[in-house]
Image 1 (cartoon, rainbow, N blue to C red):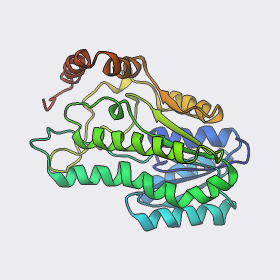
Image 2: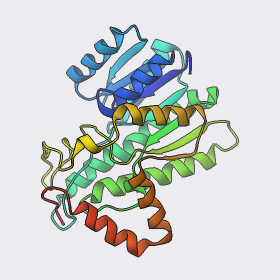
Image 3: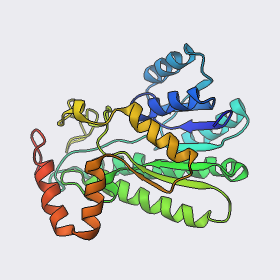
Length: 267
């Protein structure tokens, strides 16, 4: 990965920031994006102080023109694009019967259409360099989770898009990775939208028992180096995907039971 140009959307915190530090440490030239200019600049300054080649670009992935500007700026600053990691994402937590449809639409705009926009504008450079397109998906993209209508739908759609892309680019030398971290320590649950679109503020799960963002980034980095197709992390995540494929009725009951242990579980 030395001297490879890597774009990471949503790189101000969590898995995105951990990935930025990992790639920087391996000699890559990294550009991270984020909607919040203060958080973005703080992340850039922290990595620059460690001597890394890092650049920040304020952008909202749900806005198509921001993605074009992001790709243009990466080429302007670093001269090329080798790897795009579609990491930016938001979650939600509410029953389908109660959630405002605007909340679902907002999640889809970021988690699905944001990936389409970013990939579309970065792809010409990636094809030229036989690089990688990475989607940070979720076990929720293989197994629907109660109370996560918009999130699960967006990740199912993302998985389908990445599969299509992998097939369409089969003869180009471009690598496509679908990475599913499982429950990982990050801000995504604190910033998850409630039925009315307000951030819930506190995580309903015990974050201390989850895989760390750094460990998750390590696994994703290795999967990109090895050009893997699919990465499913955590034992719980692997069991959920396996059960959903071979024993779906049991998966229904088990997922319902596990998710009902969350504080104030919607279902």
